[in-house]
Image (cartoon, rainbow, N blue to C red):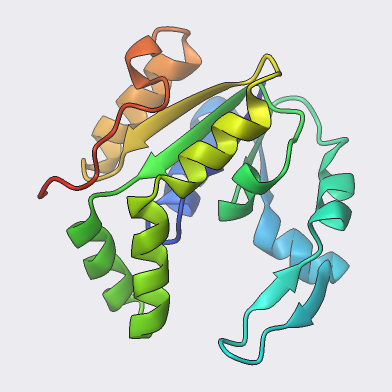
Length: 175
């Protein structure tokens, strides 16, 4: 099985992907590390010092990922990859703001990520990318604790997670 984990920064992608990889004995593919190692960016944005990733080159690197792998990044929703399942991690807006503040993100970057979450950006992109494929897109609300999130992911991976099929989450509610 090939699993993709995506969502805006602060939703818990790395934490949950590593836990899933450990629990299910999957290869963990760290897209950020791959981008650094292979220098898969086109330029650095002078406004926020962010690396602008060459998505075509990144997609080429990921096309032959091994079976029994999990790949995580906010970029998973930006390209069509050979995945069986995509899980979009979602977080209520106030909680997301809190998490990004703890990471010391500046206000513009926090606002940008909150807008992306508010617009269901990763869910909408994933649904668009994978609608013609066999890949099923799910959503998990990461306002819960990691044990609850892992139970929900276990349901998805055991083909018992229809209630998590995207889109179903309303992140405008308080946590």
